[in-house]
Image (tube, rainbow, N blue to C red; front, side):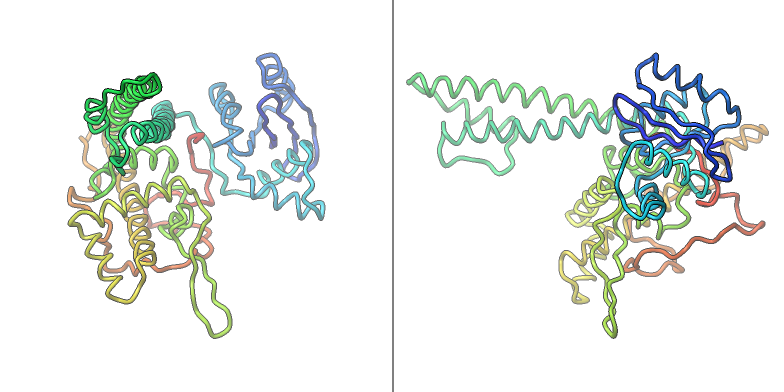
Length: 404
């Protein structure tokens, strides 16, 4: 039985259907402790149940987490799939909670490639630290902007483009206003400076914690040029299980680094994709800019693209696609190594396992059989793997995944 859940902050609407899409039950429950207990009691009538939660990475995350902690089987239903079912089922896209729950349940019945969620405390801690550091980064930007404004009024003409705490402290040390407005302005600037120092200390601490957690998970993403603790941690938190992507093209589509085919008639062209996970796209952008600034193979590849006639933005997009491919390969290697190590420990034969990328891994060290990065969105996935291939799961198998 499939239980489609349309989650909200204060309520959750459910609909229960069988494999033939026959309606078996429906209800609306509050998300407090009493409402959650009532929903669990109501669904006990169907022992073999699968919870299909819309947006388990967003609004549905709290409910999905509670269900996982109680040992329930939970899958994540993307909002886009539910919207398509609702449109084709009704002929329009008007929403109600009951209709949303119905479309979510139908998606669960018809789709075999939905992500199966699993509880992962380490990954959840990684995700929370990533979110925390992003919030601190935004707070730092706001604090610097306020400090810049005050310093521009205290010392006209000495504004710094990238103001640091030490620079602000040095500027304030040269200011001794005599009027009450100037004294008040300097006092507020000193308070903003203290806030900036405190925020930067928290950011440094969060970055150190992220580095420890990334290494604890056995990831070698930080071996890639331009991928530091923050980029690696966000990648692990958002990707979860890399096996849910059939190949590098689908991973690039998810990260928004695969260009979209915009060919028409005799004209063959591709355009920038603004789809996919924009947060991951930003992380890859940071890695690309870091590679261009340093003497890396990524910068050499970027310059080759410029020499071939591409614009700076086009060359940057090509490099971002290469970095996406490198991240995908590294995560596959990490997953294979972890699986091999786990299997070896189970049989008692020692660590063993396959090796991942080297410590000199770069975003452009692609194997000879991999073509250029200027590729559009991927085609349909193969239905199954051949028997002699490694047991790596495809999107047609329900792959465990965290609620992030």
